[in-house]
Image (cartoon, rainbow, N blue to C red; front, side, top):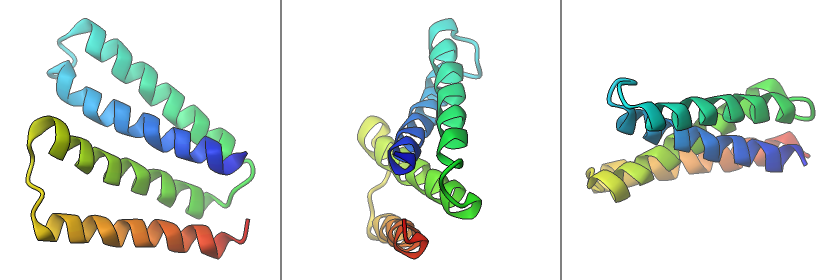
Length: 106
């Protein structure tokens, strides 16, 4: 269950990171409300996941999911670059996430 909570926390991290772009510096009401709510849900789920997972593993995977998801969202939504080095770097982050999961033994 802790792993599911952690993945959901990472997904909500992507939502709030992308939402920041739409808030235009928190000058737009509804994108700002959605972004702040996603922040609260993301951190809350991370806290719940940490009940059953090591701190370093949970935090690093949460950040990794957020980073990978946000870059992919930027490519998809904002036509950001998808060149070799960006995708290669994402692959390295994903490999690190998998390694941390395998190293946890849970």
